[in-house]
Length: 280
Image (tube, rainbow, N blue to C red; front, top):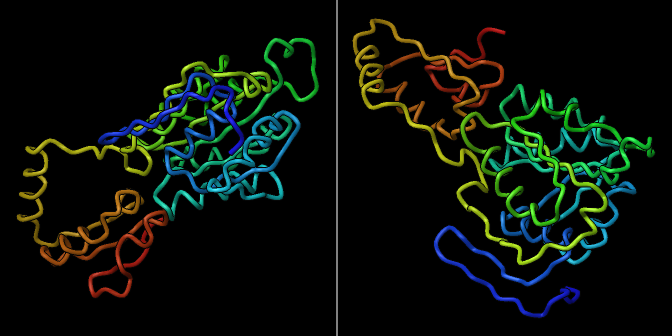
């Protein structure tokens, strides 16, 4: 790794927090350090002029593999597929000129409640009203199909922004988070960055929501009293990795199980109680 701007550095770690303390660090390196701390192994995307500062520093982080896509649409759908099978947020990136192309993949992740974090670089924001090439209001474009769209206006925001993105993407109703990184911010310096990661949110579900005990008992009572119970499972079973629990519950109540299209795979279709995919 190339030398940091300041040589004083130390690692601190305990419990769920592990972080690197430095006096000053290039903003693009700060971003990469945060991704490394969140155990990110793959990012899908392709380069553009506004992303070059990030790509320059990426050479020092071979453990974070950049997967080149044919275009930004492909990168977004690659991140979608990665998230579905890895149970980690899917990450992709696009330059400002290609930011409009990620819309289909982001919309799919939003409607499918899939955790995704996507980065778009941008021109320096103060040049947006001067009709600089590739500049546009990305925040307005994405806010309707994301849980949150965050514009980083100061390099010191990067560690907190990454932590917030992973936390929001993986908790509650999962979904995509947009991080907008202007070119001049990527070239800047972070001062005394707090590079710790909240490890609970490196995968999903980050914090599993739990129903009230009374409601659980009420549901079990209804199942116990039902003459011919039937289960219909959606993709929530897959996202929660609860397929074994569904099998155990279905066998206990001798209940046939069907799945939605998006829930396909949440119950083995060669099981005697399987109804296969039902509905549209």
